[in-house]
Every structure is written in C-alpha cells, then in structure tokens.
Image (tube, rainbow, N blue to C red; front, side):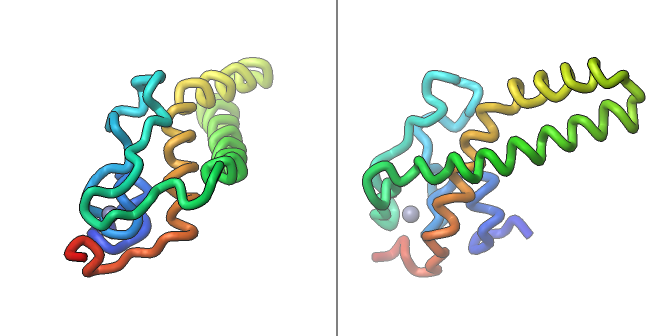
Length: 127
Ligand SMILES: [Zn+2]
C-alpha cells in the first residue's frame, strides 16, 4: 500500500509527488514549528518545481479545512463515546487534538494538494 508509485506514499512521507525520491521539505520533522512550511524549490532528482504557480499552496487551505473537521469529529467521538467525557471536556479535547496535530495537518494538506495535480512518473528521476 505504501510502496513507491502510490499517492499515499507521497502524501504520508512528504516525498516528491512525481518521482517519490526525496522529501519536499527541508526539515523532515513537522514539529520544528519555524520550518513547517520550508520546502525545497525543486526536486533534485526529477527537477519538479514544487510551487507550480505563484501562491500555489494557498489552495491547501481547503484541504486543511477538511482535515481539521475530520480530526475534530474523530476527537469528539473518541472523547465523548469511547472515553465518556462531558460535552465541555470533549470540546477541550477537540481543541487540544487540533493544536497538537496542527503541524501534521498543515503538511498533510500540502502533500494531498500537490498530489491532486502532480502524478507519479516511474522514470521521472532518470531525466
Ligand atoms: Zn522528484
């Protein structure tokens, strides 16, 4: 499922969506907050320019919105139904989950967004 060539591989690892050879990000760890959005200009293997057009990653906000709602719903169900917290405590649990997962959400949104436009090419790295 996570082998090279699947979009899920590129989305979860943050690797170049065209060749899957290297990470798009300068710092692999999203919890280094100051570098969460710092990306390489181009892929050094296939030469893909990550910022396809000016302000390309603004569109990732829409993906981020969807992810945030999904995380919020999941946090609510886990805290209310499975753990049995009160409504107020569940609300706090949602906020904590969203804040803690914010860097991961931000990167996942970018990875998903660029993978909607760039597809894997098996021989891209050899060009
Ligand atoms: Zn590449």
